[in-house]
Image (cartoon, rainbow, N blue to C red; front, side):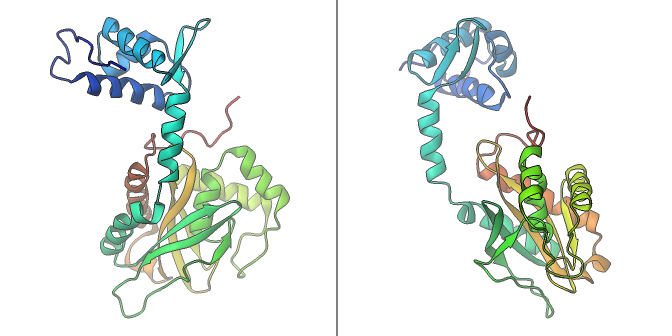
Length: 272
């Protein structure tokens, strides 16, 4: 497939491949199929150049074109490449440097969890250098309503999946502080979505505190969470808000390395 099309006076220094990639990226980021004018505006390319690139990508089966709506979306060729990339997605390896950086910045133990169905599993941690510190058992599974790492994942799911979890899973207590009320959990999810991070004080382990934010994958789906944890005195040393800002930033950076297409998730509510 030939992509080396002639550009107009704008973007003349960009290669044909770079221009084609910018078109693909614009379509991949859009919540729905887009017309040529919108794509040209998003990429900063002349409309004629954009149209030529789109025709080439459709001919190569990388994009699909709807004759009725005159809009473009990703096609089977893009799907096969995306699936191949997802098969190679190694979340612990790609996110590890962010776990390290988060621990160094906060002075606390940083952990990485991945979602497994209706639970999540610790897969990586970097221990605090402090004499008194928290640690987690890697490989252990935990429900999605107990603790900040779990709640961050649950809050990042679409509304229908949150409702499904609450309707079909017992909100068992892990400690006296675990949320066991469906109404309270819904309120907590609203708070987490607004703040961009989850906070836990003794919900999964007595005398422990943690702050976590969700990790997203290539299609915007939640794949896990990043957290810092310590004793409850951690919040006396650094506010939960400051820790939350650091964790959310680290999670966003890690999500970018995982191929997330949005800096902030917009899929929490179901699409009509």
